[in-house]
Amino acid sequence: LDDAVDAIPVHLAGGAWGVIATGLFASPTGLRRYFGVENPEHIGLFYSFGRGAPDGALFGCQIIGLIFIIGWVSLIMFPFFVLLNYFGLLRADSLEEIVGLDVSY
Image (cartoon, rainbow, N blue to C red; front, side):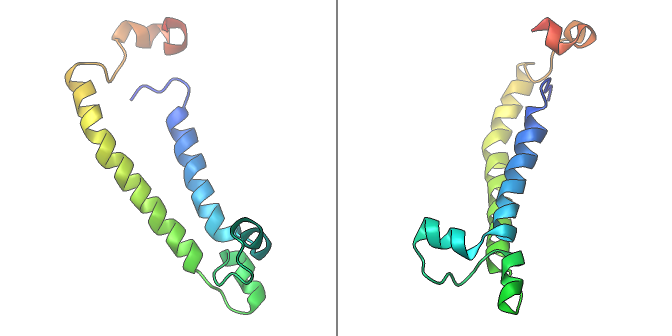
């Protein structure tokens, strides 16, 4: 894929980190405030150490969710990329690669 502005790594890495960080840093105060749960059973992995024992349930759910998101996007986008490749629209022309994608578009 020709990605002149690096949108794929930025959004992929940023989105994945957002999902993982929720499983690591979800605080009891935040869960109480946003979900109205008085005493949340599962909190972020780092906050669970304050309760005496690590609880990786929320972190595990976030990782499983991330795997499903990546699988879903791959499944949905694969036919689209196959069609783009078939019609020759997946890559830029050779001249545009030499000139530079920022300049040519």
